[in-house]
Image 1 (cartoon, rainbow, N blue to C red):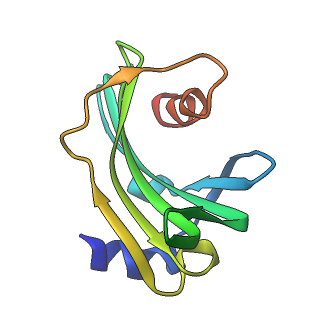
Image 2: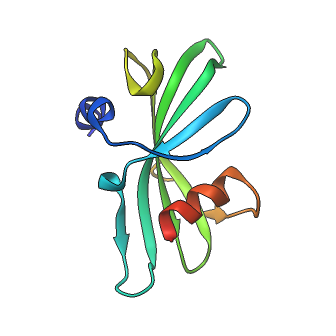
Length: 124
């Protein structure tokens, strides 16, 4: 899965989602998985976060990350299930960190938060 994402990150057709002072977030509709015929019951999506000045967590420094999120569109909850951090912008360069959070619990979407923005982008 990581190898597929790594090669796809550069070729993906990323669409702008939002930005803050430190970063900009994109999504690729080709990565979006949904369930539900009329209204979406749940959604899974990959997002690319590109940091303007980089990000440092402990001794790990990176310029961008891909993160996989799952959303329960009915209960308005979400969780992060996977993260891949890259040494360069837009998902390029070396992979400097991967984290599997597939056992994370769903948490409520907080209005006005970045999670709310990602939820709206995936569950619309």
